[in-house]
Length: 464
Image 1: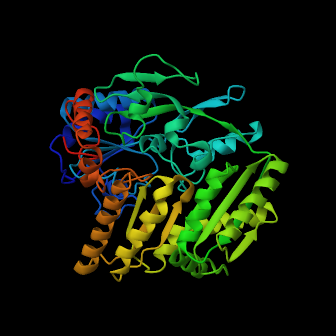
Image 2: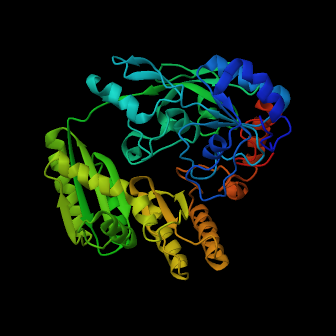
Image 3: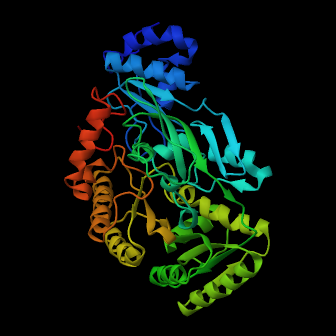
């Protein structure tokens, strides 16, 4: 084999040591390496030296023990939908592809829980659960693996009702950097026994170990649901309706926000004829009488806020069509400037601070020529901007970075966080000191205690 110009000096030794274990499931092929070093991020690609396709927890253990002995970085990889560069390999190393660990190990219908391998996708799990009347609710939009969703503490459109991965992971099987296999948590819905190690690994972005199995909470399918889309004269009216609806305790399953530019992009991309005005997608769930009642209350709140139009789905097909428009938002945004990924950024603030945060950042955007459609999970105070800039244009690049930085500053000033969903990775780590202060040093100490050789996803979240 020709020398693939490894970035890390330990890569050839790791390849030789792991080849007898993995055969052709470990590779230094350039196309496979390129596939594992980019994802959906706006950051420059950074491919690994090696890609290993693991199939069992035992294999993961042997791979990590070998890499730890050699000091070779290991970057866990699920579906590759990373936004902030979590799967990049700036130091080289081994991309540990876990997508082949895709077995559903147990469905406990009576206890409304399940145990799955990390490579199972949420779509596949819900297909298996259909006959039980149960489902797993976290929906980040992408076809993500559940291990990756836990590692990035994913959330999505239904978080307003069910919570994020943080609330829904009961237990984990984790392989530590030295190869030890750890089982955290369990199937009990609560425990007061010892440190909460499960949630130490949820959201750690693969910097502490590799999640190989998850035990998850499940939920019953709602008896009835109703979707509507409301258009408003401005963002302030839409966000005021969100706050009022939350205070009323309605059975909100999803409540999604888009600004005027985002709606223009969706109409152009999908050929729809919705108003080019800020909008809320809403889904109400519960018993039929409760849904009917809540629909009337929400319509009244929207009318009081000056809603321009309210489109009520009269069937499941109409509801699905409305939600397809919402899920097309990112691609509709990118179609405004074809060929550009842009920066897809997100912050999260307390619900009451959402109108101010949006007003302040849109004023910053207005000082530039960069299109920046806004879409978000308004019920959580979480929203995204897609900053469509030309990376070959220094002025646009500088303006986009300034908007991104200012958005984080505003969110932190309002008691929020630099990222509600996308995670830190490489893209947001510059803001961690401002957000966490001295607590960041404790995170570093935890990292060094668990991963003293620093092999697990190095350079992500913070520098040690």
